[in-house]
Length: 214
Image (cartoon, rainbow, N blue to C red; front, side, top):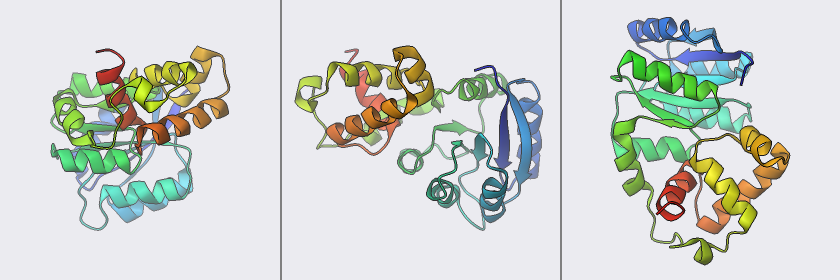
């Protein structure tokens, strides 16, 4: 993606906000639109500015990040939301992903790793801190999920799309890759999630890594 994308930061720690703002300056494809020092202010800012990307703290005093995320999704703002937090608990990770987060990054990442992750976000990819991937696979695994592509009843096109999801591609990028419209991709993704008994594309990506590449 070559177009510049707008970003807002929602975090109640001033020093971390400033640090994140400095990192954003090193990424030409991302530009800071605004910042908020709390959850309620952050949700209002997202509704007002409608940015392309929200970098959202998880634990804030007035309104936690999951509530803000749900508010953003309920308002149908077409933006990606990445949680940036100190929490490395599997429960928090899964709650964020199932509420519609597009990524989950830890605040103690090395600055270079954070910049790489934010560049990935700008490219439309799902980003999860490396040290959390083992937690994610275990936490997202559910007893009702199918054990194979055949058991899931996935079509060839759905498998192709699932492979693209597992590579972290957005619906728009999948559409470009497979030469179909973004709307068609969305319909296929809904069918895939229903067949896999899942609620988020990140869950589907984890399942795909285990079942399509094994």
